Image 1 (cartoon, rainbow, N blue to C red):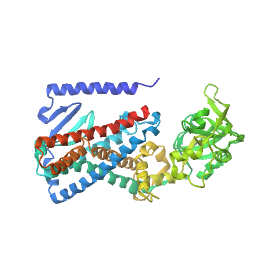
Image 2: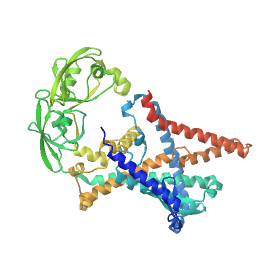
Image 3: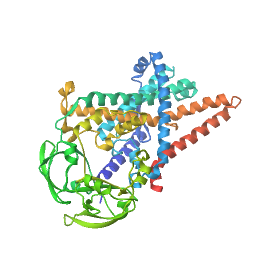
Image 4: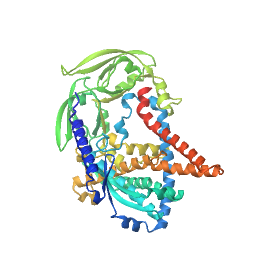
Length: 536
């Protein structure tokens, strides 16, 4: 049964907070100091800081140019995000239900989204909201509009700041000034994201060097021999069965003496060399639904002991054996499955009718199919020796410091960007012990204590991540997001030109209708990512 303690604690804190909000609202607590409530939030309004905003707004020519750039950025990013959402909506049928995003994954809230670390997430969220609202405030004053107050928004913890303009003045002002105000918030988040990404990669990660060169375990297949034995991720392999593992080639050449036989593995973890026994052999780490292995009953964690009469000692042996088969050929395979009760591997013989490898490639990667493609049998499995996914420390550093290394076209740029944004899903953000123990900072940053160095580096990444997510979300053309108001004013300008004889009422009706329809479409695209894979 799942441990409900964290959920009960969260619910208790939430109940206490709601009771506190009700008490503050009923008794008008600290009302004389500008404290009020707004739903589940406490808002502290103050006149302090308005003079600073006025001073910051003085170079009006600069800010007007910045606003013009911001509108262009919002238009480009908004179009890109819409195109991405529409593309994602067309591929939901390829996403297994168990891999579909969950509601909490769609929320960029620390403590709710399991990917976002609480401390770094709060730091990133506070920075993102503060600069977003300050940008709104500055352009409000540049446009000559009244700024009623600044303030802090709290919900148990400070969530950020806000700038409160005069809503009536915002509505009455011209479209250009209003667009300037709406555009700069999101664009400032995006610019901050780019700055922090540059500092993280080109300054901090560029100064990192590995302590040793041994391959690093970055993933372990579920129920695989390494998982059963308890080998941790971020361990560095030192040797397997007295064979030194210094490079990836050393690891790829490993071969089981016989599938399922234990081998001694020496690994470095948290400052010391440790030893354990792990069952050897080629472990299945993933099975593609609907293909030969899945139909035959292969499961992740099994060791593939033999295939079509060949003893499978490693991936090279399996590849050679598969190259001799044909599509739809029926072969026998022996798999070893771990039994928890007996703590042993037990063999089973499976009869497998192979799938068509060319047909599979045409479906998932048609660019890989050409005149030289050999039509052979296909199992539909991913495998790894002992279930270990490994890489080198140098590759980790390159991935962090030079995410666009080797990029030659726009498609590669987009893919590299998505991989960099997805570092948290790869276990590379935040970089913490024991992974951070494998690296040291060099150059001027080497003077920083290790803990301080990694804290600053992780803060930079999560300020980048939260700002990017907030900025890109806010440019979506859906009211009440900033992008929604920009789109609404844009539609208003188009209708005013196309239907010059329309009454004010008719014009507003058209604008409101188009705005609502697009907002509902955006909402559908987002919700479809949640429910689509579970329906098809």
